[in-house]
Length: 167
Image 1 (cartoon, rainbow, N blue to C red):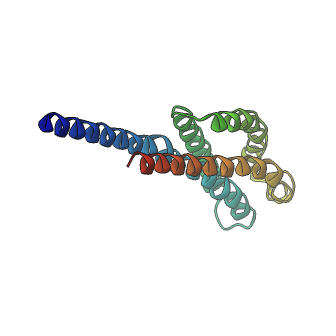
Image 2: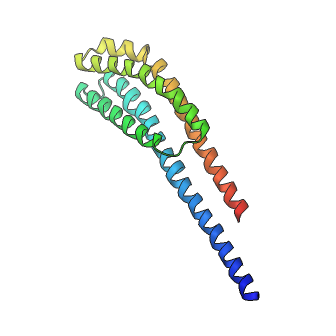
Image 3: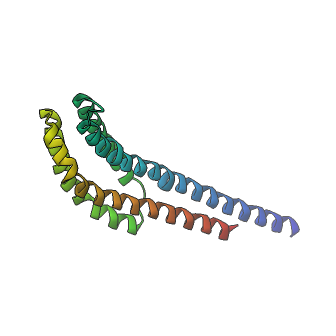
């Protein structure tokens, strides 16, 4: 009887440990990696797009480098966003994703305008672009990515709390 009780306790411990490991895997796959991807997307908007427009306008980088930075940013954003959407999303994330999807289209209109300015190498148009439509196009979508990052942290904390409870 004592042996059976010891085996039952051991099996229960292993099951709880397996559940904790599964929770950690979920935190890594569905929270930490997506958190990195969301940060990359936010950086692409803030650095490769916004900073590039200012650097080109100020003649700190060439028009060609500006075109390359914009193309790299768009490619990274698309790749990381697709990867992010393939993770397990909680309802709050699904709601934010549904809000962000149309914003991509609005932002893309301005990115196309930026690409055209970079192609024409029109410094005056770049100055008007950075002073005008750039921030109204980028800031709202950047804010939504900040919201998604907060959700990632909240869900990771919940998983941590659940593992403490199991412990």
